[in-house]
Amino acid sequence: MSLISVLPSAVADQIAAGEVVERPASVVKELVENSLDAGAHSVEISIQEGGRALVRVSDDGVGMDASDAALSLARHGTSKIRTSADLTGVRTFGFRGEALPAICSVARIEIETALGDGAGTRIEAVGGAPPTVTPTQRRRGTTVTVTDLFYNSPARARFLRGPRSEWRAISEIVTTLSLTRRDVRFDLSHDGRRSLSAPPAASLRVRLGALWGVSYADALLDVDDVSGPIHVSGLAERPANVGTTTRRTFLSVNGRAIRDPGILRGAELAYRSTIPAGTRPSLYLEVALPVDSVDVNVHPTKAEIRFQDRWTVERAVERAVRRALGTFDSSASMGRSFFGGIAAAPNHAQLVESDVLAPQASDTPLFRQRELDADSDDAADGAASYAGVGYGDAAEETRLRDESSIPPLTQLRRTYIMFEHEDGVVLIDQHSAHERVLYEAFMHDLEAGSATSQRLLLPFTLTLAAHELDAFDVNREYFDRLGFEIEPFGGNSLIVHAVPVPHPRFDAERCLRDTLASLTGDRAPATAGRHEHLVATISCKAAVKSGDVLSGSEMRALFIALRDTNLPAHDVHGRSTIVQLAWTEVDRRFGRA
Image (cartoon, rainbow, N blue to C red; front, side):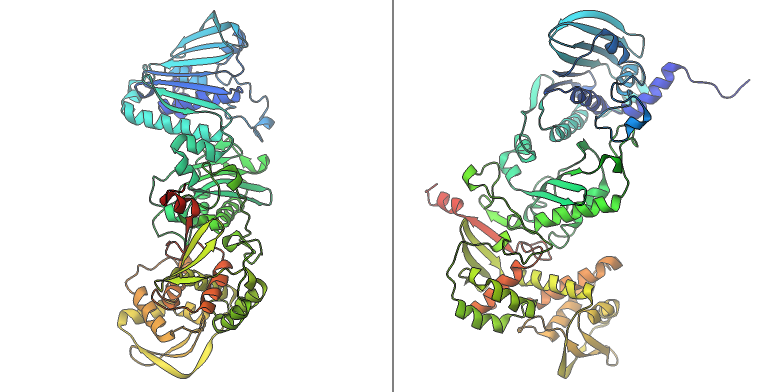
């Protein structure tokens, strides 16, 4: 007797259903995607008992005639593709023809459909049995009703979660699809109660405002960048807001919502040195790239795809998000941000364009001002004494080019630098700002191997504790590359012959002591991140401090140097460097709004 036998059709169908229909949310996903593929402009979803009792999806898309309706329940019956070549670049959500027969094999299903208002077709099937076809009257479109899910698979039914958990999964699926297809109206109800109503939206920000509120949507940053054939767009959370609200993520590739930790990880890398370790931002990103560079037929529910060149896509996403973080709009704000959102009046809308790779451009919006009459002579005299804020001669060249655009600056509490912007007041934290300037300057020197240093006429010695000496030994290579010339001097002592001079106030001995003290006891970071950790620590210790009095020329030099950084709105610890106070908020506080 043969040990191998061909499974009965009913058993094979239930096995296939196990891949496609995991839970009620899977049913909702497949049915709504069918509606979208049918060209629906409005989709209504009704749920009972978390989808275990009933799932009903109605649409106004292209319906089916009687013969097509019957074939829709046949395994691999599809209108989306004809040959294997059609799998390359397929644009529809579905294409395998497995969803409806898989659902039918584990539930009771009823389909009502019509090509136009009037005569239509009703099909009823149970547990994969041959369907019953009868005529009916209805409006154009299709309604699919699924009841008693897993009624014939008790083992599967036992693994379903409670109605509340299943409902949450359904809500997440519908929310994701509503973000993907913003031109379609979505209505979702549970146990007779309307829970989501999303009318067609002109943009991702408007759709997010309909889902989670205008204030939440307005607090997000615009992302829009093209890198070769890859276009990345969407919205990203401001670093100052990361960790203060529920983290949400959305990712679509060529109009298909997917799960891809690698792409999200690439986007999160753009936040490196702008948010505290361990916090993760909310991201809503859409990636468009040539259809022949992705394979969508690699996952049973099409939730994952394969890229022909994943590294290039991840880097394009990282670059796009980092560009967004390098604009004025990424800074923290009190009241509405200076730049427009849903709540902004049309005449206040402003297009933000800033090339992070060329931050010295004259139209960089971070510190763009109205025509201001600055005291050029005073600026010329002062900047020479403080041009070393991170960039040395580069800061001097920048000053000569742009000194007339520097607004009047005022120091508050020996901690903050304040200036007036046409849309409000801007506060700069002098320590955080200088820390960011030094960090990017040190990182540039480290990676380019161009660090400069100054030999000391009188070398000084450092006597360290054993753990501080260990921290130096671990990071010695990077100290050398940053411009420090340090040698052992017997026992626990080091002698310092040369140091970098990032600015006139730099206290090399204090910086080294504080840096080594901070590095001790730290869990050793990965080799790839060790130099970043060291540079961040040195930058913090070398920067001017809160309480330091800055002259007008020093403030102007810091203003120029910060403007020319890639990520000026945040320091290396994730704290805000810049805070906006909009005139609209000031007027509101004074009752003038």
